[in-house]
Amino acid sequence: MSGSDTIYALSSGRPPAAIAIIRVSGPLARRSARLLAGGLPEPRTACLRTLRDGAGVELDRALLLRFDGPATSTGEDLVEFHCHGGRAVVGAVLLALRELDGLREAQPGEFTRRALENGRIDLTEAEGLADLLEAETESQRKAALAIASGGLRHSAERWRMQLIELSAMAEAAIDYVGDEDETATDEHRLFHQTQELADELASWLQQPRA
Image 1 (cartoon, rainbow, N blue to C red):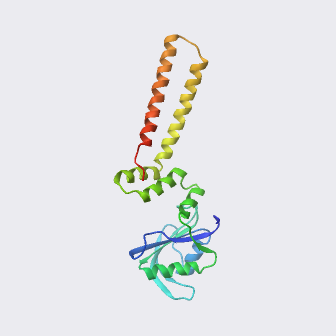
Image 2: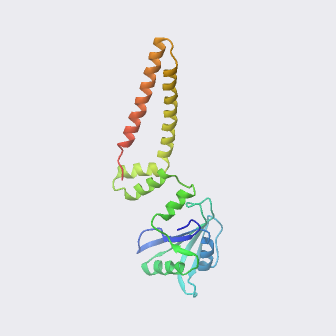
Image 3: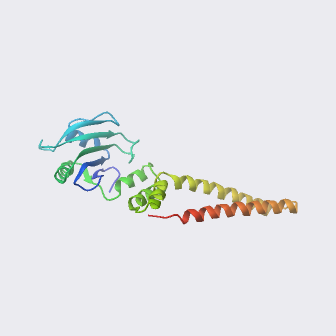
């Protein structure tokens, strides 16, 4: 597999459903939309188009959305077909995409992997998305959503800075021999701040996971 490939997949739930969202990401995304829909909307806008296969057979009337990279969820050019969610309709649109040169069906999690590789999300956010999909309780949902939204990344950066500061304080306490009362105060402050950080980390580790 290569990030230069153009991939497609059903991004919504399994049909039948009212609406199905089929997503295409990669360098040939816009070309695939032109071939099926005959034209593209302006970036980040939607338009109603008739989708046709390579033989010109009408497949469905669908909303077509266009997103130009790198400012997309995957960091690549991306299009979405919002079509009717019947099994036959979804199957026909997926088949039409499969028959286009240069496109292949996405592997499980590949859209998220591309977002990670292209810097649209970090590893903690990717893990949060996975947890969000597996969440079964309200507490699991809240915890996963916080991680997926970048909460863990911000917390981890703050923890890292605190550890650097505490390390510097510890080195200074070892290297500097001053007034006994002053040294005791510094050691107490170092212990107190270290304990606070340890308690915060322990509390986070005890949070429910999906």
